[in-house]
Structures are given as C-alpha cells and as structure tokens.
Length: 454
Image (tube, rainbow, N blue to C red; front, side, top):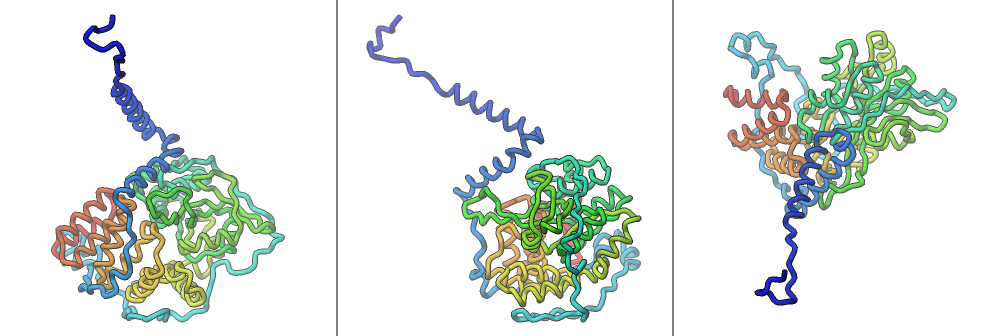
C-alpha cells in the first residue's frame, strides 16, 4: 500500500552499499585465497603487484637520481673495516688468534677516463675459446618437469629445475625459503645459490664464474652439464610511471644446435623447449657479466677443469674477465655495460677508486633503473671512496621501486655510518635482517657498531 504522506510519483531508492560491501568481501576472500595458492600467484601475482605499484607511482612519482645533483659531492672519511674474525670474536683471545694479515696489493689510485692498472700481466684468455663446428651434433639434455616461477623467484625456479634434472626432489619454494625468505625480495645471486647447493647437497660441487662465451656453453652442454645464467630482458608491463622496462631473468640452458646456431633453454616464466640464437644470448647475457652456475659430481670435475682451463681458479677468472671487460670498454665505451662490468670486477679486486671512476661515467650515461637491485657493486665502490650522499641517494631510489632489497638497506646503513649517523645506520641494518634473517653482512654491520670497533 502506498504511503499517503509521499507524493504519488515517489520511488523507493535502492540502497547500493550492501552490494558494495558484498563485492569487497568477495574480493578480499579471493585475494586471500589467491595469495595462498601457488598456481594463482604464479599466473597473476606479478601483474597484480605491478599494477598496485603503478597506481602508487601516480601519487608518489618515482624519480631517478640526477647525476648533476652530485657534481661536487661531499667526501666523507672512509672506514677501515676489520675482518669478520675480529667482529664476530667473543673475546680478546679469539682476536689474537685470528689471522688478521691482509694481502699486499696495489694501492688504488684515481684513474681519469678509461686508463687501466693491470696487476698481473697475462695473455688475454677466454674460457672455451675456439670455433664451434657447425657439423657438431645437436645436444638436448633431458628437461625436468617445468615449474613456473612465483613472483621474482626465477633464480630458485631455475636452480630447482637443475636439481630435479640431477635426481633431487626439489622445488623453488624450498630453495627460496633458505636464500630468499621474503616473498618480495628481488634478488638472489648465483653465488648464493651455489652456497645453498654446497650446504644442502654436499654430493655436488657448485661453481659460479663470470666471462663465459658461447663456446664454453657448448662444451659444458656436450659434457652433460646444464647451465644457469641470468640475462637482461625487456618487460612487457610497466611497474611504475616512467619504468624503463629493463629487467633480468634466470634461465637454465639445456642444449644447443650448432648448425642452426641456437641454444635451448628453460624459461621459468615461459616454460620448457625455448630457443634463442647464439648472438642474441651473448648480447643479453653480457649485462650480467656473462656469469654462469654449474653443478657437477666429483667424477665430472676433471671435465670441468678441462673445459674452463685457466678460468677454473676464481682468482684467474677475475683477472681474465678484467682484461676482457677493459678491452670491451675501450672498443665500445658507448655500451654502458662495458663500464659496469669492468667496475664490478674492480670492486671484487678491491680497487675501489678505479671502480668508482667507471661507475661515475656510467651514471652520467644513465643506469638501468633496476640494475642496483641485482648488482650492488656501485654501493661498495661509493662506500669505500667516501661518497656517502650518492650511496644513500641510489639506495633510497632502489628501495622506492622495491623496499625489500636487503642489499640496498645494508649499504644505505653504511652510507649513514659514513655520515656519522649511527642510529639511522642501525635502523637500516635491522631492516636488512628483517628481510633476510641469516644475512651475514648485516649481522657483521650490527656487530661492528655494537662492539664499538668504529
């Protein structure tokens, strides 16, 4: 019956808030369920997270540090860091027993432009050097069951595929629980994965080296050794406004065809049976120092030593890589990765001032936005050359695009320590440990501060 107090043309308005509430509840249930189901996360997780970050960047824009801001950077006194034996020693007796000697080395000197100081004169050597015969039979090593990677989990996914090929019951989640316990952590290095294998599977030898080439890869695959590498890719989905779309991804090489000049590989995103021309792989691999990881048994060690030859010892590998990358930088200085690769090797050899000069040149060209999430060598060079302001600026930028980079938190802390801000440094070190509780470098940093050794 019509209410006589209302006009005859009155219509009852339907309330929409119950429908909105029901939609929100359903959406929340779906998100909660999807976050617990690996297959859902693997399929839509990356897109959902990137979409959320892109919307956030519309409110808080992502700004790459401007090199012009640091034309006259402040120079801070550098710190002499004691060895781990000293920092982790429980008493003075342990410190006295620790081996505190340091290897005499060339004192780093600032080097303008691209001028090199080569410590050990030696002939240029590339592992596996030599022509690949087109008549060589194609090799296709049996591929394990494909496991799609979860969010930023391509490293553990590629390693788990390799371990399954070797007969182990392994999954990316078991590996990431050890080397990448935080779901959003963007980076796992090949050396970290090699250390995981050494600890978890002592029956296998693990070896990570740099400066590989196509002949080396062919020789390793012919010896039934699958190879984990990381290559640069162009993303098809922007994660923030102004995203340069440069990124990296781990692959597992499983074979080759010399006549067609292609490698076969497993892509943790695309699946088994992928292929790529030799030249394309060499180009995309270069951004990550052409680093590779192999696992092998004791019976295969002689084959590995024969294939790697002079590059088998780590020190020789660094020397050979430095010569190669220096030559590349002289021949193709417009390629920013020739500078970055050379600088990274110089950091490994503790020639920080030379490395910093090259990083400065690369910064002026423009670093790929995600580069420091995968390679923190610039942080190391900035710290040891007293460039704390640049160090913290780039760490802040990297943490803007991914706040779960423990390496960026760590080096931001060291930057604050150079600026005599110990309380802020401690906060950064603790954030690094919150992301990765077993992160020994952050444990070292906190112990260093707490022990009063600074």
